[in-house]
Amino acid sequence: MTLEEKQLKDVTIYTDGGCEPNPGAGGYGVVLIAGSARKELSGGFGLTTNNRMEIYAAIAGLDALKVPCNVKLFSDSRYLVDAMTKGWVFKWKANNWRRNKKEKALNIDLWEKLLALCERHEVRFEWVKGHAGHRLNERCDELAMNALKRSNLSIDEGYEQTHIESQSFF
Image (tube, rainbow, N blue to C red):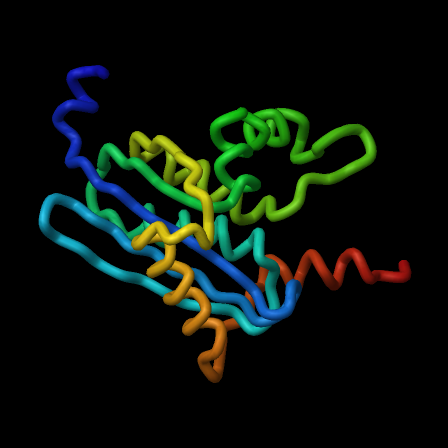
């Protein structure tokens, strides 16, 4: 650990996202813990995907931090955690946001936001098994499910724009 990392405030973030159905109404939930302080965040979109909500939860948690922090971020999303810890997202970006020669990477708008936040903070992503009784992961799931049931959900422009482009006949 560098001297700079030692001087950063330690924060633990738990995240979860979900949709009903998938794609469909989606929500995210976040619990931030710094010392004895705790904050909860949630929100949702009228039409999105489960994977987008998992990434969005991480973005919301990191974006809530007002100063650079040393963060341990827990998620039950293998998609999110593996993309970050196994370096997939960096390979996709280096390959002009392509997973391979035939497939474009998904959720590029969110990955770009997440990567920018990870440049601001020292972030370690860790996977936690979902729906396995982990108290804070269960709380994030509850926040996400409550959020997706709200009326007047926001528009997930990143999803809807990509969805419209993929349906284009021209």
